[in-house]
Amino acid sequence: MTDAARGRPTMKDVATAAGVALKTVSRVVNDEPGVNPETAARVRAAIDRLGYRRNESARVLRRGRTATIGLVIEDVSDLFYSALNRAVEDVATRNGSLVLTGSSAENPARERELVLTFCDRRVDGLIIVPAGNDHAYLLPELKAGTVAVFADRPPEPGLDLDAVLCDNAGGVGQGVEHLIRHGHRRIAFLGDHPAIFTAAERLHGYRTALEAAGIPADDRLISMGPPGQARMAVELTRMLALPDPPTALLTGNGRLTVTALRVLATRPPPHPALVGFDDFELSDLIVPGVTVIAQNSSGLGRVAAELLFRRLSGHTGPARRIRLPTHLIARGSGELPPP
Image 1: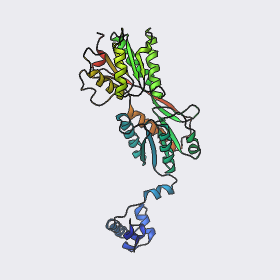
Image 2 (image 1 turned 60 degrees about the horizontal axis):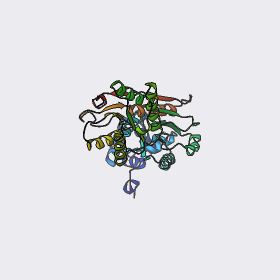
Image 3 (image 1 turned 90 degrees about the horizontal axis):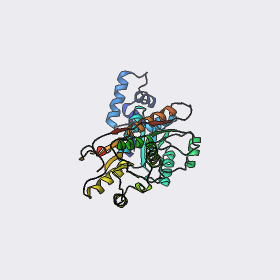
Image 4 (image 1 turned 120 degrees about the vertical axis):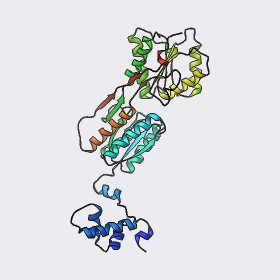
């Protein structure tokens, strides 16, 4: 029984079918010179007839690479991370590589498991959106030659690796300034868990922008935690019941913005003005359209992947930390005046 009968056809099967030496098949498959055109045509006919496909894994391994990279993100179903993922894939494709992607679900143990699993599969490099702050587990892999770049959030202090971040604080500050220009001074901030780097940076931007405008921050108007609807309903109800309630809301990510819209939809108008950090699908079709601070998720993925492949090509310069700008898109909800 031949290997072809047992499974995938091999070069040996092609050589037998074409009546040529194994080296001749290798030359044809790898587009090397030195094969008579008629012989090459006979080999290609045998390849088509048997359905032979070159073993790319073996080929790249002989070159010392696997032509794969690992990407660890928070949630592959989230539109922000989907766009980041696609941008990484585009750069990887141009560099002849595949991307293995996994979701950490904001769980540091899951992040570690994914990274080490990718390393076990001998990926050439890693792009990590970290869920935790302890990356000591990564040190043996880095010493072994694995290249890593961090995206959206930086590595822990002391880990000298490239990182591509968004201007979280500056973006939120832009949103606060926008609301102030439209007459608001009671501006509430609803953020994600403060242990998350991006959430902490956005809260800092909120406080800094209020201070710059001479407006004292009121802790009663700040709520940090998971973006669940139950928590949001409780917190918004509490804030709006204050003797001096907020006239505007600034939400710290797309999921919080959507949750806030759902909660506000259950309450009678007038509603507070709303600015959300990060754009989301259909935000322009809601009435009024949702004013957002848009960040460049595709840019994060593209730049992170370009840095990774730059390192893989041999660049050994100092680690870089790149911050990508945000921009405010005014659609109506952030331009509502105070009641």
